Image (cartoon, rainbow, N blue to C red; front, side, top):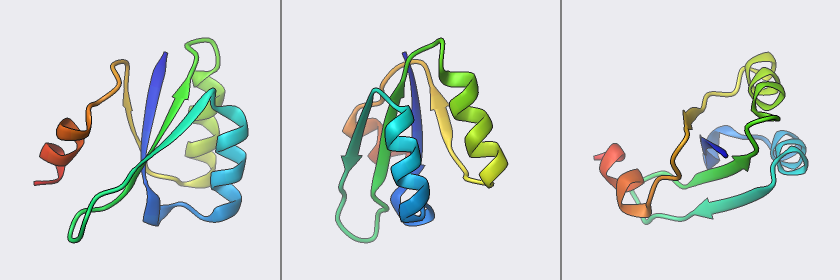
Length: 79
């Protein structure tokens, strides 16, 4: 499984809906100000190339990881 991490405030509703259909699971990590909220899209290894191509074509910034980050790891990356 691959995990695509996208800041919530950088994603338009139409893109979010498209990505949600392509992912196996979509989770939202909500943080208090001043930190950003994140979407975590879980994508099977066989489908990650098409998912990544969509993001690249649409100019959507993302982080990609093979291990699902914990809430604390996301928070640490924003500090």
